[in-house]
Length: 254
Ligand code: SF4
Image 1 (spheres, rainbow, N blue to C red):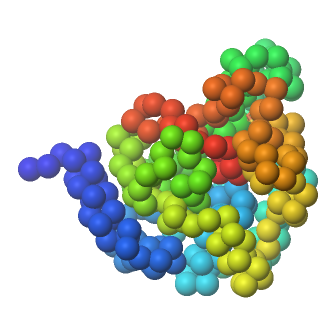
Image 2: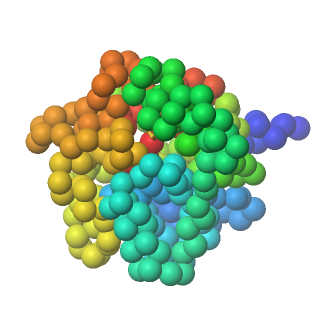
């Protein structure tokens, strides 16, 4: 008799075999064809996430959609959030906020912009504003859908469509894993999907406003995120697998 985690791991292997050969839209449909699974999609309104939201809405797929409002997002991101809500009114976008007391304690300890002062302070801010709300959002979730693409990964060029994260005891599904940025942009344009205008102003990757800046054409997309830090420290802890940080180029997913 398999225990809970082993059953989940086995299901992840089954999903991997089923979803890998399919198109990204078919992957979503096939995934939701499995009953008894709590499936959640985290959006930060990136190009990839907008494509996923559009497909979920168009096909009324039974997928919970949620976002994390760190409180420090760009005005353009909030506008994209509102536009997305208005466009896909059939999709409820659950919004998770930092815990008030933790945030008050953080600001008391290191100030509102203390994250510029050290990696430790920046990670504390990311934990309170992003990681803890994410943990709450994913509680009791079996399958977590993310808009990650293989091009976002520095050291995991072979990142699969599906993987089991034992640390979180969750199955991660990346329907867009093998798409290029051009593929995603073409989908957005062809389907008139609303998107964050900052993507057209030199922001390939959009996170919190004080921690993201525009990059020059050809620059690494990551170079606009936490630019004042050494590259090895540029993680926020959202993509932790089996208790370890998985190195991810910063996209709006993180
Ligand atoms: S990206 Fe910057 S503002 Fe946002 S949570 Fe992390 S340190 Fe805080």
